[in-house]
Image (cartoon, rainbow, N blue to C red; front, side, top):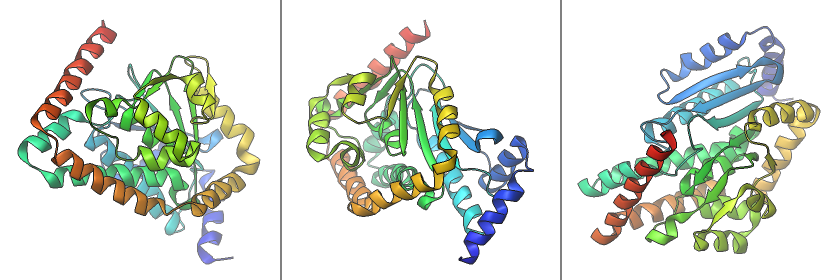
Length: 305
């Protein structure tokens, strides 16, 4: 057995003595401050929750993406160094009135307005790195799960769908509206195609249609649907029922990833195409994106009221 695997197995035994706060502290020692992200560890399930608190609205902001990426990097480093590793399941959920309204249009428009191509490149690269980590289970080391509630739009779906397992609450809806604005989400094509096949994925992305949780489940795009408010408990039950087969499940997911085209290369190509597209948007098209921002703000105002 390779030395790192021996060290990791020893680390698992030692990790049992660590409290939830100690686990979080050890990760935070490596990451530093994590804007817009809260970690919660549940020892009985060996489960690390990443609870996302994007500000000022429920979109994937660059600070949030950077925070998630730092946690992923910290866990990878701990594993590579043979450190005690109590985390076997990495799960995502969000607080607030929606799971995600998509990418950060305010940031995009600011970059476009200033001609800041590098700002868009950085955003796309960071988002794709998070997505790759979720898809690979941090290189086959953890199971990844996403719990979705309320609305999930466009590029906000992809980091969740990249996870091994997605559960959605009954009232959740899924929509890729970008096509209606001559726009497209960075990673949707490679991620969604891996789950439901390229033909069905293309139909979904070109439709601009909103799908209920049951409809999305019927397409095979998510693994289960639960009652509203029940997604976190579903994740805990998933941890319980899969603990005996967890390593095999992770290995199977990794094997299927290897069977397809190289995801990192696909994501890099998708990110480059997205940046090129964004930098070529016409004034009329950027005006449409500004209207979406205004619509988001009105919707959030209604939800808050």
